[in-house]
Image (tube, rainbow, N blue to C red; front, top):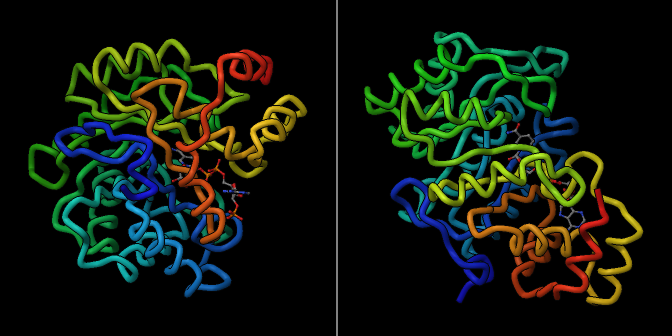
Amino acid sequence: MSNASKAGSFLLGDRTVNRMGYGAMQLAGPQVFGPPKDPKAALAVLREALAAGVNHIDTSDFYGPHVTNQLIREALHPYAEDLVIISKVGAVRGVDGSWNPAQSPAELTQAVHDNLRNLGLDVMEVVNFRAWGNGHSPTEASIEEQFTALAELQRKGLIRHLGVSNVTALQVKQAQGIADVVCVQNHYNLSHRGDEQLIAELAQQGIAYVPFFPLGGFTPLQSETLSNVAARLNASPLLVALAWLLQRAPNILLIPGTSSVAHLRENLTASELVIGTDMLAELEGVV
Ligand SMILES: NC(=O)c1ccc[n+]([C@@H]2O[C@H](COP(=O)([O-])OP(=O)(O)OC[C@H]3O[C@@H](n4cnc5c(N)ncnc54)[C@H](OP(=O)(O)O)[C@@H]3O)[C@@H](O)[C@H]2O)c1
């Protein structure tokens, strides 16, 4: 059994993926802009992920921009049959590295074509519509026009399955009125738990919930309670944060980001860590 498969698997659309996946955003340069300092190290992380059994990679063409997708292609193409690469559309980068909305039907269509070209694919397995929201929090703006545009690309055969990101429960329902939703990717971790109810609702529907910033993102999680629990489990606090997510709900799929082979290897051992009920109760206090 590979390290990535020890946490079990989940049916994402019609593809089975290991619950332990990999988020590729950290492979681009500083601030997710430009090439990495060490491209060989970035390629090594991707190859190590596959060697360890990862078959779900999260990416976007706006990481770099283009850089992350091009690294994935260079490291892994031709792709293993069981590999599911999921991308997101809805933003572009300015020449200064700024993040800007690109949410018109024409921009979303362009983004899907950019992903296909840079990844070297004819069809995207899953594309998430990333709502602009308010930074990393959703707002209740309508996503009908955008999701309809992606559903049209799905009908044309460019995308197999659709997901949504940075959305509210109402926006998920709105999207489901237009096309099937196979995954929801929102900001969620030990100290950011606004989506508890949404996760449970999605679990009942067999829909994957994929937390972004599972380790806290650009400012990795820090908490005295987390450190205390980690010390007693003889593990690092971030590994406990991943194990907590795996134990939280069966439809949670993990895509921790790292630019380091050592961190990748460590993260893939999260399923071996069992947090007992007493310590789970203590971790309830980390909000
Ligand atoms: N839909 C969205 O709006 C959205 C937004 C953000 C991210 N995402 C997706 O979610 C994925 C995960 O998010 P993320 O990468 O931003 O944040 P994250 O996974 O919460 O944390 C990444 C940070 O943790 C560090 N790290 C990882 N493993 C570690 C370990 N074992 N020990 C110590 N430090 C460790 C990384 O540094 P090192 O590189 O040094 O390991 C990096 O600084 C991304 O890759 C991306 O695919 C989606």
